[in-house]
Length: 290
Image (cartoon, rainbow, N blue to C red; front, side):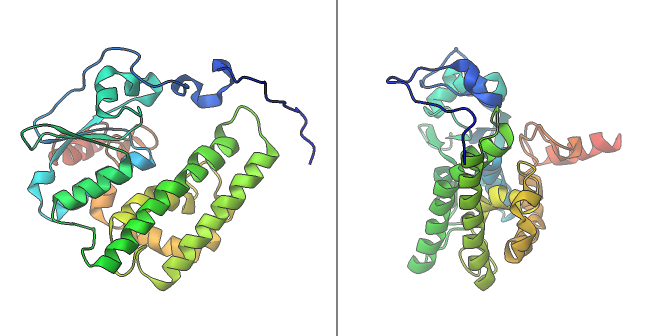
């Protein structure tokens, strides 16, 4: 194939702010805060600072699942972090997550607040905090669950930052990049589909944090909701992923969790902040005019 715009990397890379596409305003080559802004703190020990991207949805699903199991200590305040406005670069958020990415969790249940960042780490932390909920304790099953959890952490960047960026968000289309990442995403879908052909859930017979981590990314893709690429990737061919996606979506806690900190799509699917279980009912009444 011929590249219509040949590019030769310079000897020393420099930051061109105008060359970042749709997300140029939130990507930069340096860390640290850009402004002073403390984080709000609600009345619950668990304080979540997030946005309903796939990584954010993982955590709110687990929190709602824990509450559904009767773990009252999992009550939480979910504060909206508007990454398009640069909230993740505020001093308070950077203190909670020096990587300036959502989600970030602060646990105030002990004598000293504990910060947890990276979505996979938050899932493990919460599962272990509440008696290994949704995290098997039998060694082989636990290893399987954690292997799939870390598979997601390593694989999703190829889907989001790789395929999703070049297919949907880059300022111009690059055939080589789209082809390269589409091939990898198709391979990942095949990995999942083969696993789900033999098991009802990702890690085996039981629903675990592995499902909660993988579903927001690959479930959305399977239903054609990610990047408008359903037809391009022929996602309907992955029958086992389709079955699993519907199975997970049918869970009431999943339906609640995916609404929290959501600011896009159908207004009825959005709950910008969550501070109490009754917030879901209030939101429903608002939509019904009640």
